[in-house]
Length: 228
Image 1 (cartoon, rainbow, N blue to C red):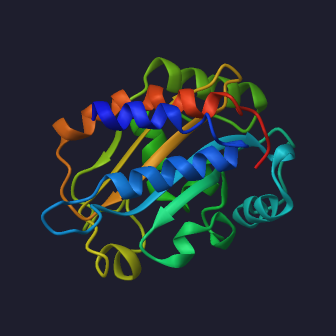
Image 2: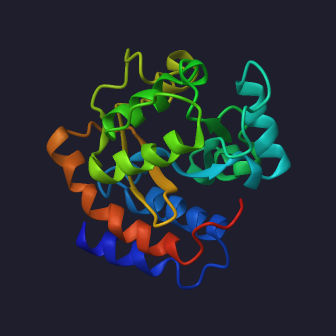
C-alpha cells in the first residue's frame, strides 16, 4: 500500500491534463492490483470520477447529463459526477468516450440518483446528503464530503441492490466487491475512485484505501478545475 501511494502521487508530474492524470491513475490501479498467484488482475474495472458544473462539460458529457434528467438542467452550475479516467478488462472500458450511461451524472437531483443506486449509495457512504438542486447545496455537498469522508464499500456485490447490471456485469465477470474512495479540492469539487474487484474486499481492507485518497488528490491537484 505504501509503494502504491508513492507511485500514485508521481503520476501527476508527467501528465498534461486532468483527463490524462485521471486515466493514468485508473490504469495504474488496474495494473497494480493484480494477483501473483493467478496472474490475473484483481480488478475487473477501475474508474475515476470528478465533479464538474454542467457548464464546464464537453458537449458529449452534457448530452449524457441531459438524458438523465426529466427536463433540461435547472442551472448551468448543476454539479455532475463526470468520468475522467477508466481502465478495465474489455477494450471499451479503457476509453471514457465509449461510456454513455456513466459519462456524466447530475448528483444534486434525487430523481436522477434514483436511476443510479450505486452512485446514490456511494454519496451516502461518503457522508453526503442531498437536499435541493441549488448551487449553494452543491457547495455544501462538497463540504460534507470533506467533513465526513469515508470509503464506499459493498463487500458482497452479487445480489446487492446497490450494484446494477447483475446479469450483464456482476455475474459474468465474477465481481465480488466494490470499493470507492475520494477527496475534496479547494474549489469544492471532489473526486472518487471506484474499483470493481473479483476478489472479496473486507471492511478492514477497505479502510486501508483511505491512505491512497491524499496521494490521488495530490496527483490531480495540479490540473484541478480544468474541463474534461
